[in-house]
Length: 250
Ligand SMILES: NC(=O)c1ccc[n+]([C@@H]2O[C@H](COP(=O)([O-])OP(=O)(O)OC[C@H]3O[C@@H](n4cnc5c(N)ncnc54)[C@H](O)[C@@H]3O)[C@@H](O)[C@H]2O)c1
Image 1 (cartoon, protein in one colour):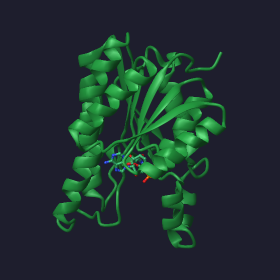
Image 2 (spheres, helix red, strand yellow; image 1 turned 90 degrees about the vertical axis):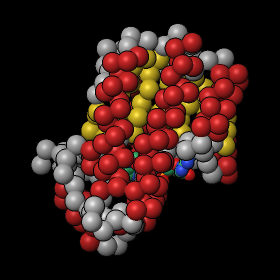
Image 3 (cartoon, helix red, strand yellow; image 1 turned 180 degrees about the vertical axis):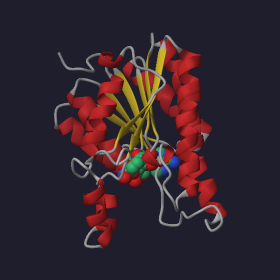
Image 4 (cartoon, protein in one colour; image 1 turned 90 degrees about the horizontal axis):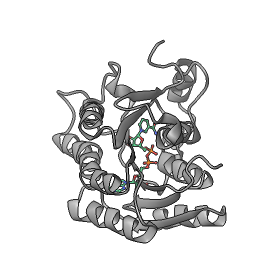
């Protein structure tokens, strides 16, 4: 039986990158997927791709930093598919403007706090009650290896992803047993965006050296999300799961 048969999943930021790979995998495993994406064209492309692959998906243009927008998306998802069982707060990401605490532009701090941390907070604020009303399910937040180890030069992003990790633990306690709340902490993942950034420069060689079992692809993160979304992880809550190719321990 497909691993997400009968489940409805909302995935934020699923127009590209890790979110798109996860949406495709969830749909291939039987979930009905809602692509909650600020870039309407990209969201629509993911949904069309899934439908072409034989899955079920709709795209809803969503800005996760706006309470009314994410609330409307959760409501539409429930209306359209009859419930909500999985919420993957994936939208987010760092930029090259980040730096250490003494040099980072203050706008970059508030940008990433608003998108990664507040966006996750809002997703949970409106998504968790819908999951509870649907009989229970799983929230999967997106943290990062920077929340689990001392990575210099990205203090805005580190602050936001550390907040996501901490909130994941408190919400796991608050909403058990109906809702499990976990997070994924990827190391550098070869999305189109990251691949373009490191193509042909020394960063790629460094990444290849530090990743003990190979560079991480979006599908590797999607596989962890699938486990956390499925009933196979029914006794797993409150944890931050690295998918890091051994970077954290080496
Ligand atoms: N790629 C990596 O190396 C890496 C490593 C660790 C963690 N992560 C995390 O994984 C998640 C996905 O990263 P990615 O590399 O696939 O990013 P990406 O930039 O490829 O995709 C992010 C998606 O989010 C969408 N988005 C941006 N703002 C939004 C908003 N306000 N509302 C809704 N959607 C919005 C974008 O349009 C885009 O489609 C992020 O939270 C990122 O921090 C990524």
